[in-house]
Length: 234
Image (cartoon, rainbow, N blue to C red):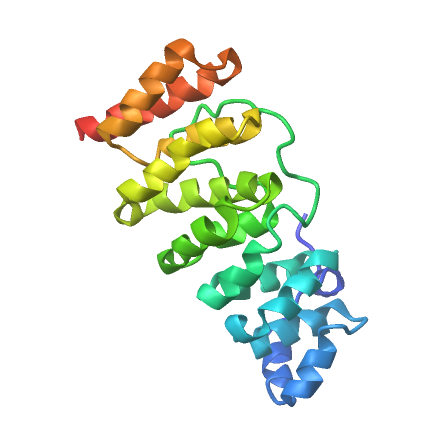
């Protein structure tokens, strides 16, 4: 059943007229509106302010406590358009918002598409411009395991759909995780991320892992190998 406009507004929806009206306000007024009791005002303020690199911290803070769908979508949309400074701010929040992150090895996808990150911040970063990829490696992959786990999802997603971003150095950094980290969820996510690197080195590593690695990783190893074989054949 289609929602009425009143219901949409209650969920934080702001139409173009509301957003244009917000753009007539001063910057100080818009920043204040980010904490308005009216969800649609918060949404309109986000769209009117934009400038994700400048206001990233404000949007992330709002996102961390926001319950209304359209306000969350507005924050995510604006942050996705950010650059390296925005990405650095976002990387500090990997794994920190919500409770949808993987805590154990999940089911292996039957699809050929790359799994969408479950962590909200990782999902935003995965869809950002490719120039922020080094931030994911330098700011997150060498951080604590919670951030590392979510960073891998974003890295794999971004490189899978933008293969020109892949480098041999990135591949080696991912492979190194199997030596320096014992967390099987991170190993599982690293196996998935390797499907974005169609190189002989990635194939050889996974082939060895398929016969010597954790049995719980085998379905994901086989999936990544199949994807790599398909890409190499192309």
